[in-house]
Structure formats: C-alpha cells, structure tokens
Image (cartoon, rainbow, N blue to C red):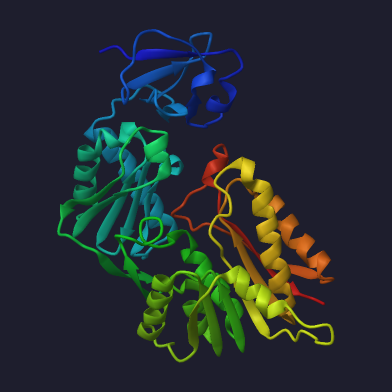
Length: 401
C-alpha cells in the first residue's frame, strides 16, 4: 500500500530536517488521503522533498512521530535492528551494568517506547498509539534479544490517556508474574516495587550520579539527602564513608523501603530515614528566634526533588520552589561543605537552573564554587537536536564562605 503523504507548510521543515521527530498538526499544509490512526505515513516539505516517515495519530498534539529520515517498514526486522542498536549503545557506555534503560523513546529513535531492564525483568511503557499497536512485535523481539524472566507493562501516564486516546494498562506481557526485584546499582542492592514504584520502578537515570556524589561524602560527618525516595544517594554516601546520613522523603512507603535498603547494604546504623514534607522540614530547621543563631551542621547536602513543573506555563512557580529549597539548604551547610543539587524538568534548562541556585546564594550572602556538573546516565542518551531528551541536570558546589 502506498504511504499517505503529509505536506508541510513553508518554513516548517527546518526543525525536522535537523533531527526533531515531532510533527504538529498546525505544521501540515495538506494530506494526500485519509489516514488511519496508528498508520505509517511519509512527511514531505512543501516542495515534495522527503523529510521522513513515522506513525500518525489524529488524537495527539504530536500528529506524526517520525521514526526515520527514509521510508521504512515497521516490521519485526525494523524493530530488531533498532532494539539491537539500543542495547549496543548501553553495552558500550555502561559495560557490566545489570539494570538500565534499554530504550529511551526519542533518544533511540523509537518515539513512544520506554523499556527498562531491572536485572532479569523488563518493564515496558507504550506512550504512543503507533508503538502500542505493534506491542506484540516489540515484546517478541525483546524476548529474543534479552531472554528476560518476565516482561511487564506499565503504560500508565497522563499523556497516554489524554493525548494519545489510549487507556492506561498494567500487567504481565510475557513470563512469570513479578511484583518486585532487588536491583543492583554500583554494587549496591535496592528493593524495587515494579507495580507501584516511581516511573517504571526507580530512577535509573541517576545511576552514575549516585557513584559520583558518593565520592563527595567520603570524609563527611553529616550528610542530608532530601527527596531520598529509595535511599539512592543516602546509601551510596554511607557506603562511601559518611558517618551519619539523614534521608528525607514524604512517602512513608519509600522511607520504609529506603530503611530496608540501608540495612541490606550494611549501613543501617549510619542511615536514618524520616517521613516528612521536605519543604516543611527545611523551613523548620532554618527558622530561628530573634536572639538565636543558626549553626549549620551538614558537610554534604543533596537535593534531588521530583519535577516541579510538567508544563512551560508553570516554570515561574517551579523556579520559586527551587529557590526556596536552595535558600534553606545553604543555611544548613557548613563552610567548606558541598551542595549537590539536581533538576529533572526539561522546561528548566541548565543555565536557568544554575541561575536559581546562584540567586539563592546571593540572598543568603554566600559564595559558591562549582566543583562538578552532572547529567543523566548514558542509558538515557541526549540528542541535542531533540531538547526534550536532555532533562536531568545537576551541579555540586563548595560553600566557600
């Protein structure tokens, strides 16, 4: 069957030619025939030059998700080649790692597909119609390439339901039923709930940063880990040599799991996990009376909050939230101590995030020296032509004075 062609309006091709895979409805001049949702189409500029081919969905803000610059056949051979390439990238840049993101959607030229490997279990997430319609092919290829004990689906996102017209789905696609697994990160073990954990289970994108920040904790007496979740930074810090670590999170379930993880990794005597609203805790610890003086006590403070904004319109509120936690944290940090801080919203870029940190330092009359910069682990590749693929950024600062 001949592919339907979507012709772009003049001036709409540049971003796509540069490598961005999203074609929006308002970019389309005309379509050569009626198109079924989920169908493969080709996209051309207004001069009939081929831009690429991809999956169409009239229900989505993203009308077409391009898969390739050429015409392709999205069959088993195509998915085997793409998934094999994704695996090869991980083996090259994260050799020996047993838990990692296998496919990171646009980063691996498979828009609408996420695949995470937790030891011998795969968790998949189909966030777009075109991928969802080819679920059986993708699962079959994953089973061939990786031979996991189980393949679970956690296609539960607001975007899937509202923008793609798909119901949320969760269950076992292949193999045995698995609800949790002990995940190895940098030689440490983390109990992970595959049914109710964040994202598809835990934050694999911080794997390399856990080890890097732990190096800053080697000689620390007191470490504060805010928004700790399963205790990733806290347990790595204690294992590296920190004498006392306090981990804070508002989820009682996460705190209980972090406590168990600390014990399992032999640092239960040095890691204390507390259920609390981190904003309220920081405010309480930095509020003093008129004749009182705040004595900072922490050698290392880690801030790794969830995204404060899912939309560009809410960036202003997010920046105020980021500034608030940095103002409070800097008041608790000893001179010579280190602040390691992260932002996981792609709407707040690296420059804007650092501006917020420095504004907080100015307001607290502190001078910071940047000692490290961080990004997402290599299993979450960044394609510069697709800004949305770069979302996690972080810095470490020494408090000079």
